[in-house]
Length: 447
Image (tube, rainbow, N blue to C red; front, top):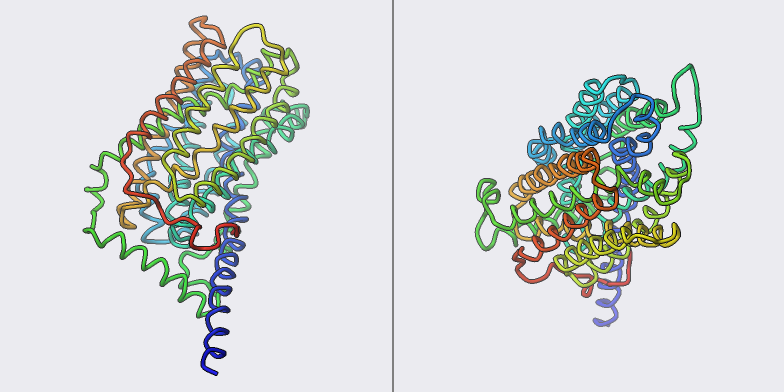
């Protein structure tokens, strides 16, 4: 009799935990996925508009590179404060503010006429969006255990290639319109900026800051996830609490920051000039080149999902990151070999896209493994701040190289070298063992 009463009490408990994990993921991840699609498209749609915009406004490659990159100077303003605001105040209110203001600033980019106006609008867009990504990383620590986090992050970050893959054909269609006497490239910014404002209002009512506030969870469900996350926090504190200032002085934080800076220098310039790269290799029109970019981004989305699953299954983060960055460098360099046909160049660009989006999910788990919640929030903000300097450095140097009559393919080799440097810096990071893997928690289950 005793055995018969014990067995049914244990089995439902394990099933209930899995159901709670899926319930949380189903509530948060689809919505955050949409927000991040909007976010990344609004910062990167300048790549789709570039060819027609530069021709219409007589912008040189150097002007475009500076304008595309200055976004990240403005982005630096609220990175660390933004992450701490999410940790100690309200994610939904902070995200709502960000969405509404960056939507308005995206529309402004569609109204520029001079280089100065272009610089100012892109700078303000960066200020408006600052704190969104590190805030999301911190927000995930409020809801997902470390063993689930890379997969959850991959679910969110998959919005980057998915959004760009979706944005490519949509932007290509918008480029062909001529409404109210405004060129199609202006409508790219206007129409793609408005969804951020709409979803900013929705965010206020949909997102929940902490599990304790989640009315969509049953009381026992709230208690379970809160207890799980609290246990992880206490385990981090066990070796000795690390303060914010101690975290910002750690070598790992700076290696990760400079690695992200190098990778972003390569990645953002690659994305901003990808339609141009395709146009040079194929000779197609600007709108057709924008549409062709869907292929590398689609490959990136698939690779990101698989890398997140692999990283969570094994609990390994560092090699997943560094190998992905090194392969990006190799594939991008191979795309520059002269004399190749357009299909062959697209093959290498697709592999570049796959490798380039495989490493972010495991990368962003690294700073959360050993730091306390406040220290991790600050370090994530710092890493993203320094890292996003690469978003300015890469496009600026690439535009300068092109203005100095350096060939497009030779300039791409500079971007490849940035990725290889990032891979080396990640290898220098010291990781204490592995994060908890799914090996002990039903590895084949998905969130």
